[in-house]
Image 1: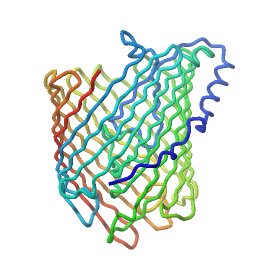
Image 2: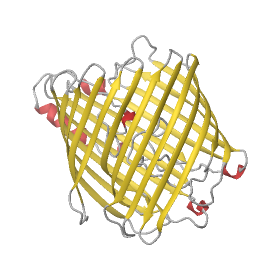
Image 3: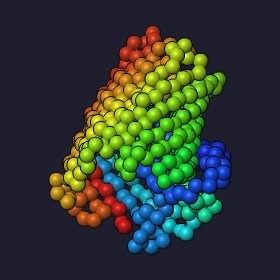
Image 4: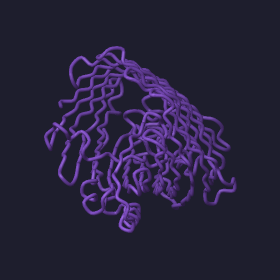
Length: 448
């Protein structure tokens, strides 16, 4: 049984960089143009957010009409699954039947100045054949919408702050509904070991005119490992505690109500330390990108973002980056394909900057008002730019399919199947690979 006694690893919000907000505030105070704020949504399922702060700020007024100023929404998620590799290892492969219970609550509050969403809960897993693997994990998220507060100081200024903390022994390798976008979801799967992840974001925007706005954001992302001595013998590869600071700023021009172009700059600072101790080393990444978003038809939309990045102390030279997606959305069908090439931190086997490539395909269809089916497939290829341990490479692919049945408002029963294969290669050690199959029956309940 894992013991959860650590709670001091979250960076206080007061220590978050306020430079993006200060920058926009200076521009706002020195610009006399009267403008209105606008909001832009993000599609997390596209897989385009790896290592990038999402350009999205939710308006405080959204969703508040007709609802009380404060709401408490309890939730419960219960899953029974067969898992072919519960240790997530290439050796000592163990299969088991696992009961997962995730319970918690979400508190929504819409005030005149601040909109707050606070959610938290715990995840418990019970193993039928190997009870020594039973554990309890925790998670919590705080979102603050400060548009009304800062808008009273400067019209057109917008600001939001968020923080998410997750403690779990099963760090997710692919972007899924359970694993939100961050620099550590890159198609690389670590062994089972206790981990603490903290993701903090500050997002701000200021409207220069009805069609132009400047945006800035800061993200602090932390990943720390514990109890790695339980990995066992025969396991090759270290785990690196990693801290990532990401600052982004850019200018967006709305060509029309559905099309836009964004010119942006991003700076990343990655810090690595072997979890068993050792020197701390860092990598800096400076990148630029041009993003074009276009609605081709009412259903079809496309996005393309070519760019380039310069990584410090890397002899390979500048690296090209790319984000691209093609999506179809109507009342019954949502589908698309996405490609992402970015510079992400490598925290498994060796700490280093990695060139990460991911191709994702996704499909979701509403059969009736109660039945929904879908599938997702991913392919990932990641290679280190420089490392004290020599060249490191990862190749992964996986897929998941699901059937959902909503039998009562807020209650959904699901059948989910997954298959994943992860391979990594290190200089002098050759290839190691692991695969994993799961079949799950789940029940999700929200009491609105």
